[in-house]
Image (cartoon, rainbow, N blue to C red; front, side, top):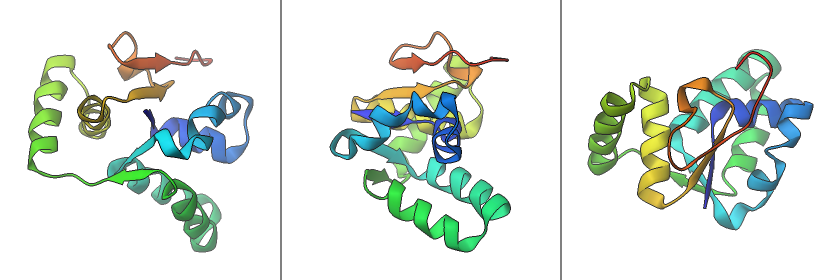
Length: 126
């Protein structure tokens, strides 16, 4: 199971060389877990940059994985992991989703560097 962080989705959608490294996880939709917070973050950015029509295409692509909503157990886990690892709110929800689903987080976000269950992709500036 794989969770692609919002930064990975955005790089992939932009077609960057960094984004290519996320392709395997994104294309394996049977193993793809999409935290609802990633859906929100990615769509906000896409709407601002490319408009509503492109955002609808992105919703369809992200929806090919298993979208996971925030419920009470996830919120509790995210709060605990966020405090334990000093993660921002969105990152704690992403990490908790992955941990509860037995998934690996794919990211180049420095907040996740060194955490168990994270496939950290080196990127310039991270």
